[in-house]
Image (tube, rainbow, N blue to C red; front, side):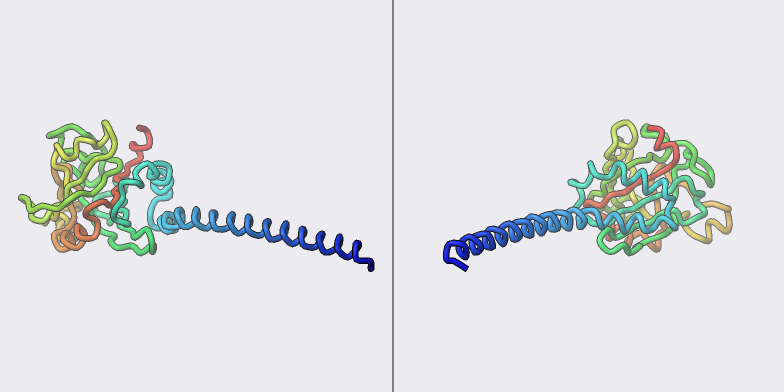
Length: 224
């Protein structure tokens, strides 16, 4: 092979190598971006994996609306309450978004004017003694008339944004228990607060306080 022909072949090989290397880098960058995107979505895949335990309609509703609240999250757990279920069932789930671990699955009360065993009526109005649906952000704890309690910030205008004004909080209550259900056929009812059992209250509040998301669902919420 002549020197000139050899040089042309060598230069062509070098150029081909540069093209292949460049393409590989772009592909690697695409993979990195896709991996980053997947890591952002993956935690919510854990939540979706609970569809055998939590009504898939709730998960679909949650997935449609949660993104706008993500910047406010400081605590990587989510609590879902299914008010389509009777109070005598364990209708509250708290899930670690990063691991998929179900931290709590327990009873939770609704407001006295929301319904008897079944929740039917919801309101954002002070003194209505009804529960409010939608997305909440947990805030700070305080010691109130129910003991250790957790303030809730309602995030949806016209649906639950008067939660602080109404003193809608997480607290323990002696009417949230299996014994109460056996005696009355349902849980006791609150003034609108999603009350939990006294035995669980401290651990539950410690796990969800200061910047976790709560979603209180009923089929009527989807109509808003």
